[in-house]
Amino acid sequence: MKLRKLGKNGPEISALGIGAMSFANFYGPTTEENSYAILHAALEAGVTHIDTSNVYGMGRSETTIGTFLRDNPGTRERFHIATKAAITKDAQGNRCFDNSLAHLESELDGSLKRLGLDHVDLFYVHRRQADIPIEEVAGHMALLQQKGKIKGIGFSEIAPYSLRRAATECHVDAVQNEYSLATRLPEMGLLRTCAELGTALVAFSSVGRSLLTDTPIPLETIPNLEFLRVNPRFIEPNYSANIAATDGLRTYAAELGHSTAALAIAWVLAQGEHVVTIPGTRSVGHFAQLVEGAQLELTPAQLARIEEILPVGWAWGDRYNEAQNIGPERYC
Image (tube, rainbow, N blue to C red; front, side, top):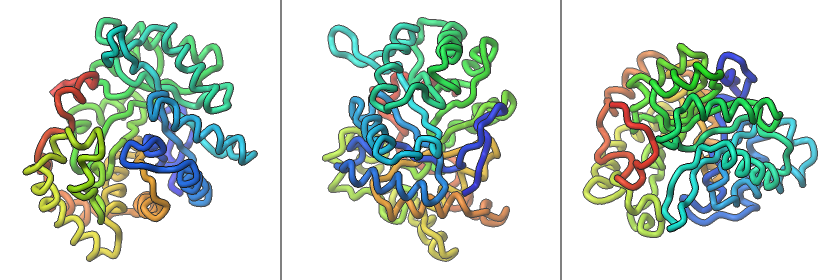
């Protein structure tokens, strides 16, 4: 498995990681046994990075990972584990964000208990609280690092200017953002800023929430999925238009003898040595395709052909609806 440093200070992790949101029924029902099978496959393939969050299944994803580590002695040392906090609810039950030190530490302590760990290797602020300066939040993270509860510091879905501000307080090891052939937003400054500051760009949803695979989620399944049924790219007529647009990538992948998911993963990893990716899956077979992509080295001609098939801006519909877009920083 290809290894890459998590920012300028390391450590080395696998270029392909596991996005463990899929361990919590986000894209359809799953079982602990199924998630364990993926973790075993990861060990066999040399995939070392696991990304989860306190809100994935309200702790279910972390609990699944923690149980696996407990029941498989020696596996903790083989995994680099990241989690997140900051998404919560107000007194009225509305979604909001809390970047206070008290909240971040309390939620981190809960995550550590579910994971069965005394520290995590990377801890993200999942969403920014707009009325707290990010320099102050970075200071909170540095304190958690000094306490030994976290090793690396990360932020999710922040703008390049926010990364620069945070970096004046402490080194930011990673910024997580959606990045794929379907979502090119990081190319509008974040990709370059991460490279300049020695920060890893951790790309999630790199197979476009299934659009960039051989078997996109069927239209009839989408009404059963809370996130996708209101997501602009999966609502008609956008859904059918996006399937038609990505058919060309499926054809090209077949011509090359690869899965479409493998091609999509290889493209993302070709965008910079500081880029790693964390696609999620509930299928061991699909996981093998993701591993295949991490091992591919696309030629300049192949990269150019992929860009011809899916040029910037091809996707129909925004990546989020208005409610889903509350929290991620908009900068272009």
